[in-house]
Image (spheres, rainbow, N blue to C red):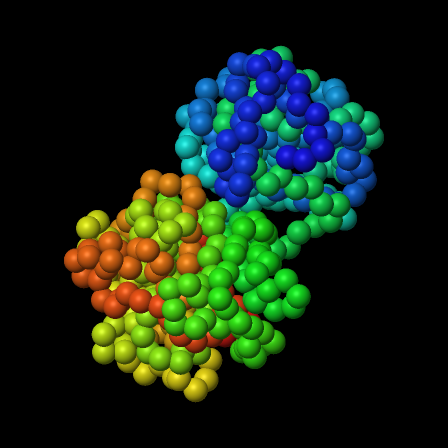
Length: 406
């Protein structure tokens, strides 16, 4: 939402977004953010954004973005939510050359929308949350060569109000075709920390989540560098802004390489407060007997999987996944070693979650008191490399790739 000029009344406001701030639009205000013309005519391009519709009541369109100075065939680029029968769906068109995803988008949910045009084959693609929903052929490339790029409202698209109702975040425009793999990663990789290079705490994922660390060192990792913790309460890494871990029953995956010095402590801790307190859950850690535990909270108790042969010598690849379909799963070095049915995943009703590596901070006592918890809370001594969080359940094939190339 940078470098745009807002117009309309009342003034645009900013709210908590998918990451950081998002821009908020009200349908009855004709609000719009405009930028200068973006040269997308006669070429391939990709546009994507996170959207959160708060209401779906417009007569025909709720505009996400586009370039539409006039309603002329192939000269009115529009990406919208279109009212189709009894629901609204992602819609992509050049005007006269359009494609409808025909899949309902619900209010009060964050959705990743991606729109791709491949000029050589003149094909439109619509993706939702990284999944291809629809394709359609056009008779021409985009021909519009003037007009501002508009976000949240396309005044010339329809005579009725077509302002977006809700929030738009992380909107980007690329003058190329993004691959299906790239779009899936952009939609579902919540964060990735490799701990490499001169900025080891930098998020390499698409969302640039913020992070900090205390009393750590950088050591030789699985590849290049790893972050190493001392096993004290003041030695930890923390990142914030994990909406993917703040939605009840949202599938997720956590991937990391671990080389412990002792089979003790909390490796991955999730909380609504930066102190480790609030609604808090130790996701990965060690039991009192030294077994590795991965767990989630379902309703009011924990469900966990135990693994008793973790190495103290080599880095071990750990992947924890959850979905309502497959429940809780644990992969060790590319092998599924445990699975347990768990049809629900409980979390706090919060858009901001903190993930702490290396301990549980001030949440060690309160988070360990929930029935079923198997992780003995405490600080972790050892190294962690290539930490990733996904807002989907990664597949066995994905785990294989992470094991081979991370």
